[in-house]
Length: 402
Ligand code: 2P0
Image (cartoon, rainbow, N blue to C red):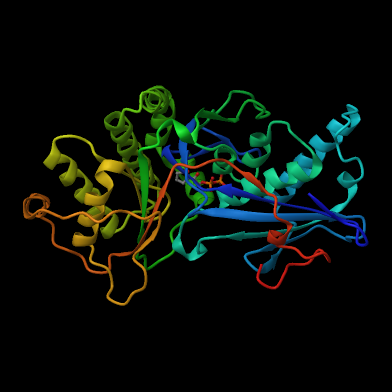
C-alpha cells in the first residue's frame, strides 16, 4: 500500500484470475443475495494469460465513490457494485469495532476511486465478471484490512466471482441458509496439485451476442424441469465424483464428467422456454472433433466445456497438447495474415499423422476459430507491490493508459 503524503491518498493494486467451471452454476434460489440452486466447481486459469487488475484509492478529499472500467467511467450506483462496497465496509466496521489493532480506522468512511482493466479483450466473449468482482472485493479487503469470508461478498457481485478468490481447483458450496452465510467458495486443491493439466481457449467467431447469464438462468429456473432435476438429482453426486477425480488426478474421469456437465447445462438451456442457444455450428464441430480424437485413441485425452457462448475451453494433459493443437489447426485453418493464431503459453509443434486425420474425418472449416489462448491452472488473487503499476495517479484519477 502506498500513501502519498501531500494528497493523503491511500492506494492499493491487486490482480485476480478468470475461472472456468467443470460443474456448472446455472440458476439462483435467491436473486438478491445470489444464492445458487446447485453447487459448482471450477479451475482457476493462470493470470499470465487472463487477469483483471484493479487499483483502489481512498482519500478524505474524495467527494464520492467512482469507478472506471477498461478506460471508461461507469455508474457506481449499479446495485451489485453497491452490494460489494456495502458488505466490505460493514466487515471493516465490524473489525474496527472489535478493536482489531491492524485495521485502518480512518479509511472506512472515506470515498473510494476504483480503476479496473482486463488483459484480454472483452470482445473475446470470455466471462470477465468473475475476475472483475473477485478483484474488486479482494482489493477492497486489502485496502480496508478486512480478512473475513470474502467469497460471500464477491458472490453478491456475480455468482461465479466467488470461485475466482482461490487458485487451483475451487468449489462453490451452495449452502442451505436463507441468509447465504454458508454459500461459500473453498479450495479443493491448489494450483500445484496437477501440474500437467493444460487449458486451450478456442475463441470462436460469433455473429450475434448471446443472452446474458443473469437473465438466461432466470428464465431457466422459471421454465426448465430438466434444470430442477439436474440440481436435485445429478449435481450432488457429480460434485463428489469430480472432487475424487481431481484429488486422484484421474484425467479420464475428470474429462468425462466435465463434458457431460457442459452438455447437460446446454441441454437445460434448450429445455428453457423460449430456448436459449449458446453453442453454434463451430462449437458442435469442436465437440465432434474431441469425441473422434478420443475415440481414435480409445481413451479420454481431451475434454471440452462451453459457457454462455460459443467459445470452447479444452482441458488436456501436457503430453497430448502439441498433437491436439495440430489437430485443431488442421480442421480449423486460421485466417491467412489474420494475426497471431496461438496466444499465451507456448506449445511445441508436433507432426500430424495421415492416419489420425483420416480417423477424425471432418471437413476442415476455415476461419471457424479466430484465435487460441494457451494457458494452465493458476493462483488466486495477488497484491501488486510495484507502485509504478497503479492504474490511478497521485491525484486519484486514471493514468493515461489505464
Ligand atoms: C459457471 N456461468 O459456472 C456458469 C456456467 C455461465 C455458464 O457462472 O448472475 O455471470 O452474475 O451470478 O456468475 C455465469 O454466471 O451470473 C456463470 P450472475 P454469472 O461459470
